[in-house]
Length: 198
Image 1 (tube, helix red, strand yellow):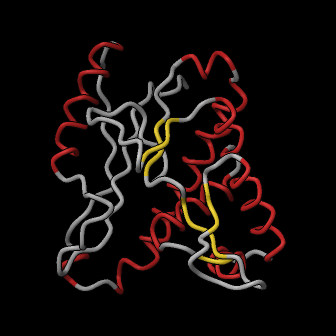
Image 2: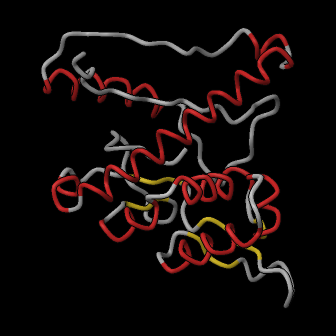
């Protein structure tokens, strides 16, 4: 949903944002990652609507929306609302973090952002498990939560990810295209990292 490290398809400036240190700092909070994700997935919303979806108070969502707007990650949707209700929409559909120097330049911001993404992804997995038994049978029988361990060099990990991303690129959807009948938005979470030593 929110972080696609370097991928094999080109960045589309109309739909994608590539993170720099300033944007990393703006997104280094799980609430902000959640808000951007909700706006991307469900479209424009007010601070009140987002607060209800996130089970927090409106003051919190208003504050985080203002911070995201300062960074250019959300914009006011002027085609909706009135003087009382401000509607917000995501400024981009995808986020890329593909500059390895960011980890050296501002490790706290980079790790903070990645932790936020990991937390939001884990929460999405738990929500899926909570609703799994109530899904239609055809949706219960697809999907996986798998864990694989390989002994690889850094170069092999890069090639592995490039191969996986090439497969994912075949299924990439145009954000402006109409959703096919019977389709649902499917989360594909990809993580690859050296296992911490015990």
